[in-house]
Length: 372
Image 1 (tube, rainbow, N blue to C red):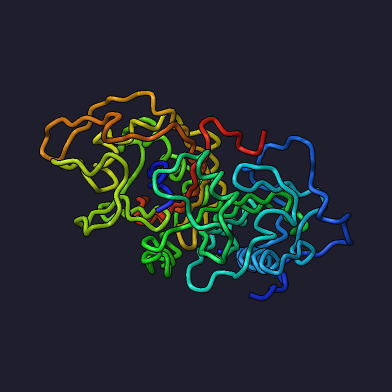
Image 2 (cartoon, rainbow, N blue to C red):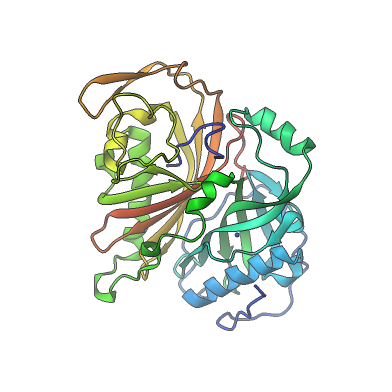
């Protein structure tokens, strides 16, 4: 999961032609987003509806990003009845990042195309016109006030997209998660870790369904504070908004997650960190959608919505030396908040998670998801 707290959680080209996609007669204008309540779709497309192959989905995503930067929804392959949600708020194409995007990703971009689900995941660094990040420790309400009043300038933004395609290669659902990043976080956001792009030998690739199932187990492990519910590799390392929040390597002054800077310390590796009980502040993980898996690279992408009422303090954690520590309102002085988040999991031929790249933003507790 994405594990940083309020104030610590904040610490993606020219348009490509969709040559592999089937084309149909013109549809009604895509700018008229559907107004009815629509739950996000994670079901596989019908077997006959394979408008886009793997490369087509990657190209269509790049076309979508180019259209965002051009502030031109008509340049993207949008269905006339598209549903568009950005940072848990229902919007119309032309609003939100469609207005504020400045530049497309250069060196940091990860695609997760899914031919079976006819979906595409994307996590990248872009720039946008926005207010600087709010002061550290700001509540969601204070942050909203800051963003509404501070002067806007071109700044880096971390983005995660979920795109759902119909049988004609048109985007019927588009979901954005956006978060600003601070200067000290940029060191790990220059380019993705090279292991993320390593292709799995064809005879060793896991099935699409197996990858989806493994991605879902990550949320189970966090929710139940039980690492045995998922499969972490010994070299697992998790980055969140550019911060290294779990690693098999010794800490080198990198920002940590809330409550883990105690002496003696809790485990820092992916498995031991959960087993320590440090994530008990997570009350529940809702709107879980592991929607894209790419057997060629072993990449899996999911979106979720973490709820943190912060009403279970104090609680105990197990330190690396076996002693018990405490998390309380003094060492975790955080206001209640939600964390909509995106995760990309690199799953090897061994069926284990090696790299996790995550992002998210904080908002008010019990915020809607945008898909009600």
